[in-house]
Amino acid sequence: MLALLGLITILVLLTSIMTNRLSPLVALILVPLVAALIGGFGLETAKFIVDGLKGIAPVAAMFVFAIVFFGIVTDAGMMDPIIDRILKAVGLRPTRIVMGTALLALIIHLDGSGAVTFLITIPAMLPLYDRLGMDRRVLALVASLAAGVNFLPWTGPVLRASAALSVPVTDIFNPLILVQVVGLLFTFTTAYILGRREEKRLGLTGGADATGEAVVTGRVLTEAEQKTRRPKLFWVNILLTLGVLGTMMSGVVPAAIMFMIGTVIALVINYPKVDDQKARVDAHAKAALMMATILFAAGSFTGIMRGTGMLTAMAQGAAGFVPEAMAQHIPFGLGIIAMPLSLLFDPDSYYFGVMPVVAHVYENFGGAPIEIAQASILGQMTTGFPVSPLTPATFLVVGLTGISLGEHQRFAIPFLFGASVLMTFCAALIGVFPF
Image (cartoon, rainbow, N blue to C red):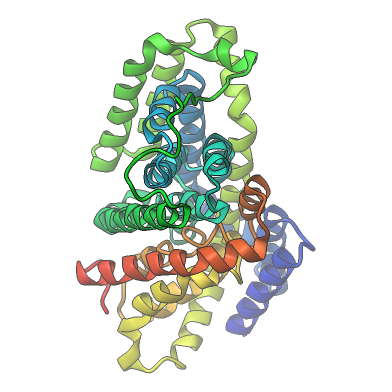
């Protein structure tokens, strides 16, 4: 009975989110709540929700302060010299331009926002592509690939995986650092090859720039952006950022605490006036609040599904359909298909609806649920998000580059899928999960 109720709950959740009948926030709270009441758990449901919220609190806190921290140092201008230096260095050589695109997108994606990455990278690089007649699909692909393989502990998929399984983000991410390095090598290798291909197509194989003209590139800041910049504190902000990230990844101090401390220091150093501090927090509060509410809603969902026993019952029922000899291959197989799953499931549906069930099935065979989370983030809404019709970022990419969705998907999906498969093999080879 519990297994059937759990299955219906998951199906209703997926359907309501994917058909836009309910927002993820409403669906994650309302659907399991109704299911628990139907199952006869009554007021005990409140206890399940509280237990779920307790487990999610550190993740939500980390995300809120990570958004504010990166927003503050970006407002202060930490990224500006880096962006301008990249634009100046690429000149008019297609190979440099394409590799510069990858590097710029990688750096901008440090804050974990795909939308911000595309909003800065594509307008900055597009004039260079158009000036030489380069293929805009290459720009869309390379920016997407750099953002996709850069799954950091504070990015949406990692946070969702952590929330769904109640495990620390660093436990999920740290074993995948080498895997991510392989993904980045694939990204820059792809950028180099595509750049060389563009040089040959344009007849620029002699090693010279397309013209002898001087190239002056750089972003034009608005008046509001200029007021928030603190160029004299560039190196201070760089050192602060490296200190926060290094300490967090070492595990010495929990991630949420490090971002809290980093946020406070960044505010005091860059904006000593109280009014300025309030303004900077307000500027990034909306983005932080939107994701935090989803995470707390997810805490309610997982708390109910675990507390009622629906998740365990579903996993035990599903385990009967999986041959025991094949069970150890579940993470590897999931990693292979993780990227295409981005075309079928939005991140909330997958990480809060599908992945927990798969993780519990794997656990019933003696596997570690965290391996399912690690396999998932090698493709599901990481390399997959820039081509998924279920994410706004995809339409941002095609809108900014002026290409059609079909063109972008046909050109980019083979490379994005290749990166996902390569990282999955790497993860298996180094023992993150078995083949």
